Length: 200
Image (cartoon, rainbow, N blue to C red; front, side, top):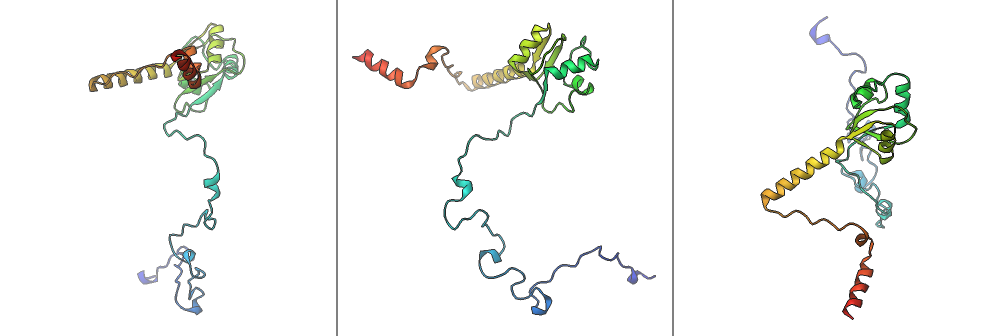
């Protein structure tokens, strides 16, 4: 065998289609692009075009938005924690965090944090350290004699302090807090009517 006789395996390299080389090639004349018009050229943007009328995707109402900074949390319910305790996979004497739940097989991964939900019944006394927990879950855990440390609260307080410090350095006054209570529940129309009566 000589160097000029070395060939690749049959079919290893597909030959490029040669278009526009006459009718005998099979791809002559329009080169497989059909007839005249926008579709016969590159950069076609007719997807969703409906002859000039408003396209369907623009007629449909738009609601909500996708938050690009939203955290992806791993959710776990109370019944799942109780099952792990009954199976002796969780050590209730120690602090239980996301890593402990993964090691016990309760969760596959912690993602951006762990959120505890209140579905099911919890009898064991657990000391949890998680990103967040629902109000019902916190109530059930504390009723069983356990505790819940929510990292979200500390993170939000830290972020608020950082913003306040930055605003103070720039000389900005802190934003006025909205009044709480029944004053928030009064509509603008009711406030206008009350003001009109006061003027009369």
